Amino acid sequence: MQTSPLKHWALLGYLVLVWGFAFALIAVALDSLHPTFIVWCRLWMGAVVMWGVWRWKGGSWPLGVVWWPRLVLLSVAGNIIPFSLIAWAELSVPSAEVGILMALMPIATLLLAHWLLEHEPLTWLRFCGVLMGFAGVGLLVGEDLFQSGTQGQLPGQLATLLATLSYAFNGVYAKRIPDADPVALSLGTLAVGGLILAIPACLLQSAGAGFAFTAEAVSVLFILGVMGTGLATWAFFVVVSERGPGFLSTINYMIPAVAFLAGTVFLSEPWGWQHLVALLLILVGVWLIQVRNAGADHAQDNPS
Image: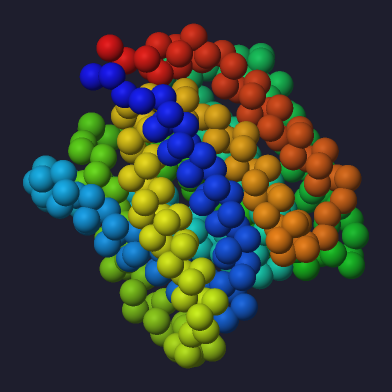
């Protein structure tokens, strides 16, 4: 079936914007909301959107009882842990820097895939990409290791790096499970995550700022949950199924740049030359680990 390239580029642009701006939006939400409550709202709002997509596509449920442990693991590793770590990290680390550090995720995925999956060798070119990525991270984190005045950011920086590992583990695990309807799989993981976090999120929010939300907080939650989690998940699956992962992989270069611009321009977060150099090093590293699969990805991008 012939599909429109314009539609795919539009969806790709949408993903870059909502996922790139998500870091800045989280920073705004943290002014009045607990990190866990933000994550819970993202999950249940995303689940509601995916439920609508699931119903629109027929509403059949192909996942049996055997899938529930898998859904729990996918939700914990792919949603709860990384979402929570990122939100908690932004309590002390500027959103622009968190966005740069999250660019390490494809490199972390490669390292795990090398050990846990077949046909994912760590070639010399990829190894150079890994070194470039680590050099970029070292440029950001290393400063806080040796300067006592900024050590308050180090836990948040490490939490962000742990989030990339959690995403990486989730990606590798997803490749090892049987194929399933992506809409049902997404709905299941988001709904399970929403159920797991419901009680602790409400208790933590109640013990903190309470539930007297400002219009700004509600608006940010809507964008993060509906647009940045629900609709973005649907757009993600459309692009992957119709164009393949190679086409989608270009967002790995654009999202960190958008996150950096959103934080520095719209939130006036501090930045320096080391942020720009670190961003460049990490993005070059991501390019090096992906360049080997260009031919295969091109074939995936043009299914017939």
